[in-house]
Length: 401
Image 1 (cartoon, rainbow, N blue to C red):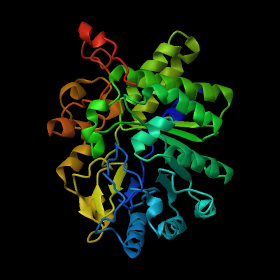
Image 2: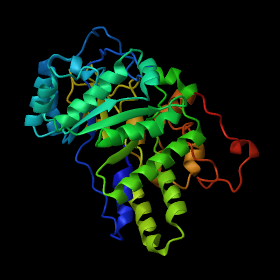
Image 3: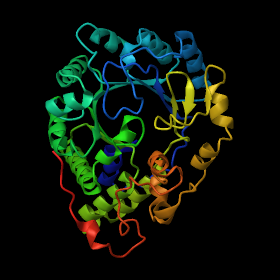
């Protein structure tokens, strides 16, 4: 996760960056259930509204939570499918909270209503992320269910009234990029605490939709829009949190944006140097290091987009042992510094910031997890491996409505 607001706040003072803090264990994104009441086009879990066999029992989930404490996991993000379709979701949440975990809920929001909002409030989630992928017509078509937009926005409203920290989650595509400003206005209208924009990753249904990924010029424009809005909120004293995920080129691009915006002002000379160090301390892609995934059947993965790559299973193995002792070659590569990336990524001057970016796109396109990332939206000049660009790269890509 790339924390835009957190990083931009460092530009408000000359305070030197602190030494990077080593996380005690990985954040675990846990797909507790594969079943979902929606069938969204980008779903990495390829969920359906049916029961899936082999899912973890309540007892198995609780035993795994005990072991995750041993593994020093600080954060559990309960996801799906749609996690609210698990009958024991609140029992699981209470157990995890009693163990001291930071617990977040990732939901499409359509099942949050007046009948269960008090239960959700009582569950005391530190954060509830609700996915809304555009305005009503686009969202309902993308989520493949009429009325899902209104239901999800109703969930946002109910969470806010209940005092629950809530966020909007948007997957950026070529087809909804022009609605980003409208989504930011919704955030402000509903006083949403957090705005998360996910870049499209090529896995699950997203893999089949890779040709619909936001084109690079559009991605840059969207990122600049988020940077500007986050900076505006900081200056206006609005407490909000802008974050992105699934494209670690966001880090180098933020540095480039800040250099263009503040580079001529001597007051920001030291702050720009500090920002670069903050970005290096962040280090980019955290798959297999500070991020882990457990799927609905208990299989352990380096992150949520590596469901084709199993490390073990919590039904028969301890997560703590698998995560600590794995000799898996992909995991060894993730934990190598710098990572053994190839092509443009190996030559990039920003490798220390982005960490080689998301490897699943390279694997999906080439079969080689360490090939250059085809989703990096920075050009050869921006990453320092060319001084000029072929003219064809300057052609503006037309937006698809």
